[in-house]
Length: 434
Image 1: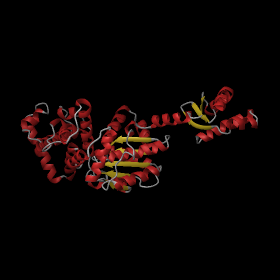
Image 2: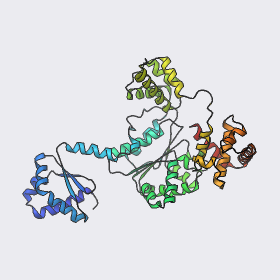
Image 3: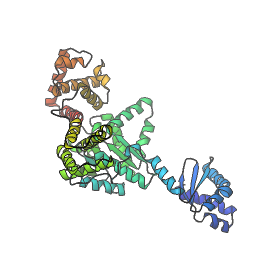
């Protein structure tokens, strides 16, 4: 069986052997198949009377024909009249990935800074696999890359709920791959991501430098691409700036369409502010909208954070939205002064880059991979904070200051001669600042 219509035609052939042409025309001429729910065939009849007749008189014949066809028990469900609308809404909701909820093209504010990326995303959504494959969207954090990525998935799935869509973040791809290897479920992992119509990958920069992850991703990419299916990728930078990215992956990423997103201009920021406020049922004065747009210049997520804060002020303490309350909300959301990361953030992001845990870096594990990551985290802690050697050592089960100093100097020496290490440090700092 190649399609739902093929299945239904086979059932009609069985019915035609047992019913008169008049009965076939009377009850089944306007009956159409609409879906397979597990072991249940769903039909639609525009007439409730006809639907009842099909259910009471012919369901046994249809179910037996289906059971013979598939060699297992099947049931019949007949929808009548407007029941089809409720069914279609339900099926779309069931197939929709939870990550895609709310991320649509209608909710994306288009401006000069993202016009090209938006147009490219729309083109891919309307003709997946036919043009711009892969689509590689890049730009700084908080500019709408993930929104466009998920809007493509939302559009395609809304148009055809049967499409298989997979969404994964770069670091989660590594975590799931390692888990699959450990549990012996590698084939299941590969099947999950290789046999899809649309592959959405967010923050691909996290796989750079991870040899085993890049090897697996390379084969996943090839399988999907060669099958003519669509791949969409986001990153905080273009492939050429990923110093430790495998050349095979870099050329494949660059072989599609590269679309960058820049920070929005004032007019676009004001439109985004109004839109975010409207979504929360918040009415802002033009003065408040302009004030927010002038203060937040490079991160849409921060605009959303301010709107959420203002909504809370209004709902919880019934605060009137003034320039002062807007300013207070902005100060709550945006870091003031120079950002100094905590030791926890530095250790966490370094561990994540090397596919390790914070406990690995803090503990006594002396394997080459863990030791290297630990040394990098100590170097970053010394570079990005005001902590003393002794205070840094206390973050690693009270290692003495001589051990910390030796680790820092080792990384400093490597940075002078090893471009790979330079790329690693730069990438981790970028992740920390994000």
